[in-house]
Length: 325
Image (tube, rainbow, N blue to C red):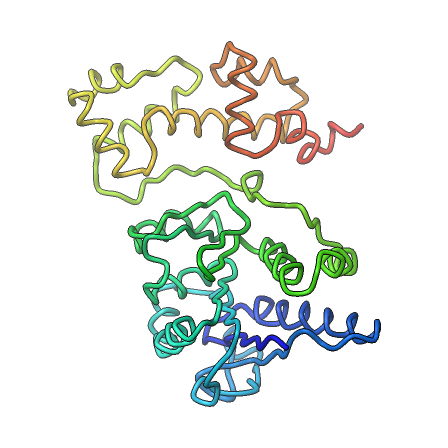
């Protein structure tokens, strides 16, 4: 039987504590109904026996403290709410225990922005990680030594797992059920909880707001120009001349400040504008393509799918109610 320890940090999001407990205990119930032994032993584990969450609205009674758990097979790190720096500070006592369990052979799984707590252990340095797309910029600033893959639902690297944002972690939970029971059980769980079992990207949910949390004024001005004039043809040379910065210097500074090249940024701004038009208007694909400054239908469709994970028509059908009638 696989030992599962679900951490209950202070500031934890209650759902991301209860949902893994629920999915693995439900798998046990299904197995036992088939006359098979349970596959998982599930415990809630914390720094204390009682943890208050969501401004003391809820109290979680843990099954054990970390001092009482010498060995486990899998550690779950739930999402954290509120100010992230404060949440990391009040839960730093969990970090040595997580590292110890991993070094002793346990796998470690972060859910949504629980990736910040997992990243704080240092275990993810040099590895790939997912988290909620909205927290991607902050994560990159705080943990530059980690490769953030912000469009992915699931990443797995040598026994370290992470998931995309919010309900995306259900797909990681299904992945683990399939891995440690079988595909049939994962499908049964997916049907029971009405989960899309094959979802592997959170790209279609992402909203690009631009990365302006930096101090490079010239880059900010370039960003603002792009966002106001995205319908026009904008080149790196045009921006370099406009702001009297060398071409290579602007590209380097832009990449450092925004984590995008100039052309990537232009594409993201254009695609965000296209998404909004698909969501709110009855315009067809060609009309939207021209609206955002594209003239090549193939290039537009290819870029749109690369950014959102969906074709333009699939995106419009998904988010525009009028497209269904």
